[in-house]
Image 1 (cartoon, rainbow, N blue to C red):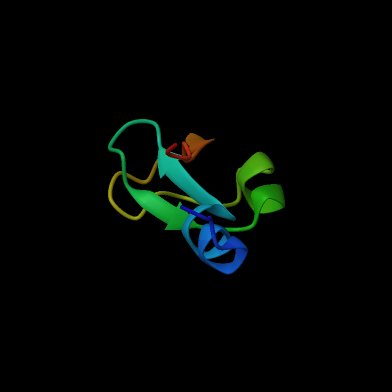
Image 2: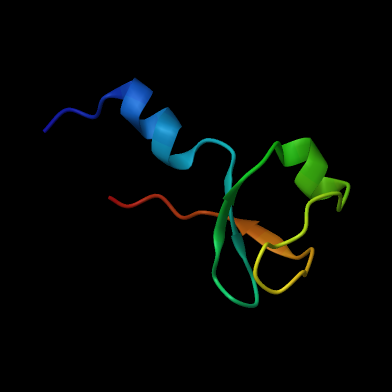
Length: 54
C-alpha cells in the first residue's frame, strides 16, 4: 500500500503530544523548542513529537 505524502504531512507534520496528559496539538516546532506553547488541558509546556505508525 502506497503512502500519500500529503496525507502523511497532515497527520504527522508539526503535531506534538503532551508528556503529561497525552493531548495532541499542532504547533510550529520552533515554538515548542522555545517553550511558547502550553497544553490546552494541563497547561504544561513539555511536549514530544508524535510517533509515526508503520
